Amino acid sequence: MPALFALIIGIDQYRDPRILDLRGAVNDANAVEDYLVFNVGVSKDRLMNLRDEGATRKGILQALKSLVHHGAIREQDPILIYYAGHGSEAQCCGQEARNVHTMIKMLVPHDFCLEGSNDEHGQGIFDVTLCQILNDIATNKSDNIVSRFISTEMRHQFLSTGQTVICDCCHSGFRARKNASLDAALAVRGIELPPNYTIPLHLFGSELVCKSSRLSSHVLLLACGKEQFAIERQGRGSFTSALLSLLEQEGTDKLTYMEVMSRMRDIPSQNPQCKGVHKNRILFDHKVHSRQRTVYGIYTTPEKKNQYTLQAGEAHGVAKGALFDVYSDRLATCALGSVVTIQTNPVTSQCSVYSDTLLALSQPSYAIQSCVGEGPNVRLFIEPNDELRDLFTLLGEHDTTSHERSFHLVNDWGQPDLVIRTDKGQAQIEIKDPICCQYGLRKMPFDDVRAADSHFLFSILRSAAHFYWYLHYPNDGCPLAQKVHIECLEVEPSGGLTDNLEQIFLPIQNSQNLLSGNIIFIDVDNYAAIYGYAIHNTSETPLYAALFYFDISDLSICKLQYPFPY
Image (cartoon, rainbow, N blue to C red; front, side, top):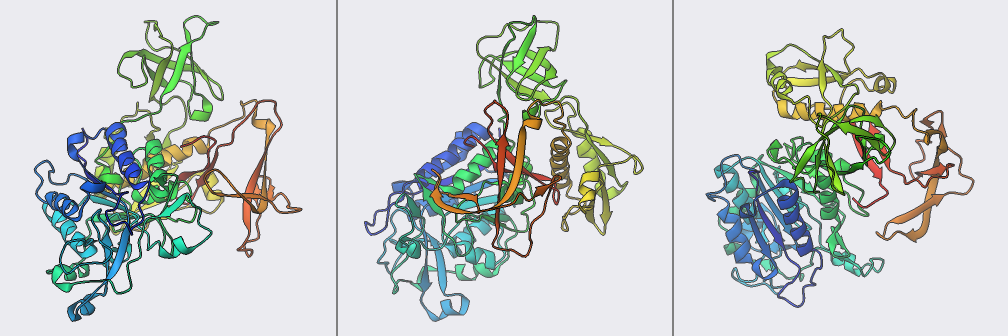
């Protein structure tokens, strides 16, 4: 059972009628809760939930402070604090406040009052107050607090003091609501306070100096850039939807925080960001593993005795010799046996039983990959060095029969794909793959990876194994390979919008194909140019395009276009 502990807050309804209610904050909070329970396997007794009327100022502060000495949270347990709702900022009055900083960022609780008060009633959750509580949690519990404050106004001050709290936020939505171009289906999660609104200085103790301290125990995820707004569309926050879609697909035990930012689907008018000393850590410090794997349908092949058809093939990364565990239900609670692939096709595979016992498949049955099949593993050379000893240990403990690609250790002269050396305590990762070297990449751009950070190095190697497998996967045997042709063209906005309110682009008049010999030639001085792909299917088979970008600068694969919802 994952050791993660989470406080999840979502506020749509506000007591003050002058504050515009939201429609997606509670939905987002519920979606985060569902993901933690059903995808990650977090026990419900390790989740604290506050919604609408329950998310008052007093209720939120009590919940936050309870984390400091909570008996169920052990040292080093990862902690997630998630907030979805309005945020704002206000002036702090008093000479002492001016000596520290003047603007106070705040979360807007359910009982917030726009006219303010001289005491705590109707006030927000101040950033300095939250900062002090997070500092206390880190001191008492762990250095692995993960705080996601979706659509709040608190980003600037956390960044300015070097906090590594994960905080997704936007600035005030006042200007955005005045913008007539905003669709009625959209909402901004931020409120503008009256110009004369101030916060009495006596509400603070020593908290005003908190921002001057450097707290290196958090990572900060931002929903948007400095001059942007966190938007909710059709009852869901754009950032939360994109974040959960990625985590549902990739899991929590493979991605670093920076990889989350780079692999999320594009969000119109929002550029999510990641800040913090530990932004290259695996999510939750590699202590929370996703239990969800892709499930494929499988059925008996009628015309072939003792064979089975798996509804996954080469397009899904399935290779000959791959092992699959077969279950009678999609939740994988009733095992029937195992099969091995004996022939792969573009979208299906033929399988036989792995043991001598025939499978009595119910209709339908389901298969989950347990071991990869034939195919090259990453050839790896690691410099003999005491600083890399823990990495050797992790590689030795790695299950080579897992559903992931593995590694093959070679000598320096054994034509490795990757070489890991050390220089003054820092790991240097050299790339030897001919395709990457052909385009000038001979070293991975990681300048701050400590050689002793074996878990992060291991995550890089796992990503590299995944990258090389798909990079070198042949498609010569695919009958459709010669039926699909791609053009790269300069495009321009058509004026239309998709169902997700994204712009539709069309080729400019007399646009020329920029793709020649698998190389795209573009005018780098034309900064305003926008490029797109035209995909032509000359076969009689209906096809749906899934486009991926292989980034040789960091050996990552980014999804550009997918034909179905995430």
